Length: 462
Picture 1 (tube, rainbow, N blue to C red):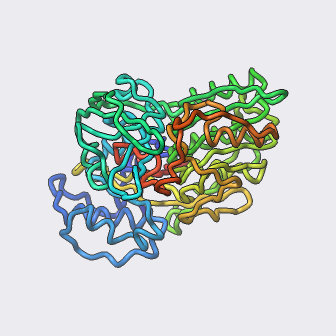
Picture 2: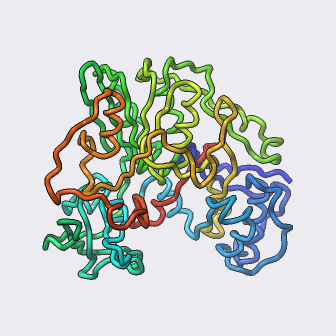
């Protein structure tokens, strides 16, 4: 049974993302008013059976009147273990926007820690604020500590509910001798639809004969590829000869943007060399053999050219397209990881929606696995890539981006220069979370659940 993509195919989601509206070519056209759960579930099964990477592990088709979001997960391979990534959503427009960085949000990410050993109250330690977002306009910034929302102390059971409010007053905190307390300062923020520019921060740091490019890149979104290229044009014009790529907040995105970034970084750029190849299921490989054609480096004029190594700052939220960069570049140059182990996602997905628009349900199933030019793809576990230098990113308040004493950047600069940085920290000014409560509840969490997806999206070859 062969699937034919509808003419309304929209290309270009995340790493190489796209929305695919399709139906079984041999099926008769159903009534446009037939939108019962049974009909939707039949559509779910047929599309999944054709595209799903683990199609051979699916159960036999059976009639079901369950809600589509319940039925979908019964079809997945060993969910939520082997396949912990595929999902279904009731509104294709919301899904599409979220994959392109457009969300209705306050506009920040934070790491959540318990505030003391009783493991009751928690704090939001702001790691990232979207430029132009309501949060930024209200004065919130990286390094802020949030202890209350609308006057209620955050704890492990209420924080998810409190962040669903459309308008919130955030109570800011401080830490003194390991004890957290309110400062009396607040920030009132109302959610708005914003698009995150993932090319968040860049800087050139000069250390002797070292000109070190530093880039904070928060998501692979193709609409900002020009911004990404401009940063590298700036790096190249300033003679950058070392690069620190901060991907600790980057959950993935368009594969096409990952291909561009890899081509801007790789040493001795050669457009005959392969970045990655994609492995699809037998159905797709038979009907569309071109889909398995290896992806090669692009001719990027602002490629830095002579980098011998790349330093990547990582966290447990560094995922998908970010990991593709690491895996794709390792055959050609040293890629040195600093921070925590990565998320562990070596597979990509597509958006499947109904070509007749009878319903707004859309699926985001896993459809491919990526391998590098050496055939390597051994990071698809919950431990991902292990860091070469394990550095715990838990010294708070978090320093501003580009601050040379910031925990992970400081380690990269030490490795590049061979000099151990010395710094004086004012008493009670900063504290290591590990002294009190160990591992965080959430790392770089957004108040919008769509932003917490770890994704890698593909564009279908012509």
